[in-house]
Each structure stands twice: as structure tokens, then as C-alpha cells.
Image 1 (spheres, rainbow, N blue to C red):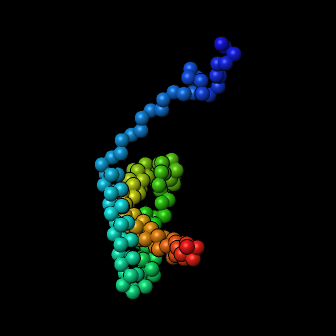
Image 2 (tube, one colour):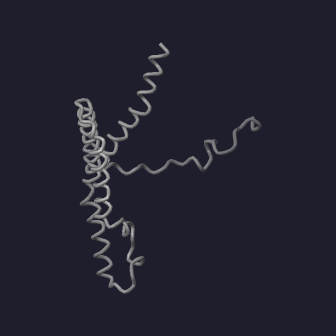
Length: 149
């Protein structure tokens, strides 16, 4: 019977099939942010297509400019993410340890304080992308389907 035994990575006694440690549970703050992002995305898309249906066709330009402006504001407020993941050893040697830690803490505070901007930026950009997909892909596909029937 040893002739037909399976050897390799799928062998049940193989050391490579150990269970991975369980993932960390999702924090309540992350759940709230995900729900807020979803609701804001639905609202942004609903407003966008309602305005387009009512004849306000410059809504594309408004959403696009507003999304880009907020995105630039987010990057500028966070100072280009230069200190994201920085350690005191990575900073300038002319600074004291207290100044280094203060800069790192300030960068972390700025990231947390500006997180709300992402719940506005992402829905605006997604609404524009949904419209572009609709205009350039779905309209042509629907016309092709109508002509085929």
C-alpha cells in the first residue's frame, strides 16, 4: 500500500499544512467607517444620476473638480505622507529625540484627523467612475443588444 500513498504538499501529515493564526477582529471604528463610506457612496451616486436626469449635465465637472480638490487637500494636509511609517532613526540627526517623537505623533494625528475626508473623496470619485462606465461601456452594450434582438 505504500506505493499509492500521496507524498508532497498535500499530505495530511506534512508540516506545511499548519493552521494560520486567526485574524484580528475588525474594530468598531473600522466598521463605522465602512458603513459611512457605503452610505456616502450610495448618496453620491444617487445625487449624481438625479442631477444628470434633471438636465444638470455639468455635475460631472462639479464632482470631478471637487474630488480632485479634496484629494489635493488631503495630501497637502498630511504633508505628502512623508512621515507615514517613519521611525525616529529615519529623521534628521539634528533633531532631539523629543522633537522626532513629536513630529511622528503629529503625523499620526493628522492621518487620523483627516480620515473623514476619505469618506467624501472616494464616493465622489466612484460616482464619476460609475458614470464613465455607464456612458462608455453599458450604453454601447445595450444598443448592441437591442440591435441584435
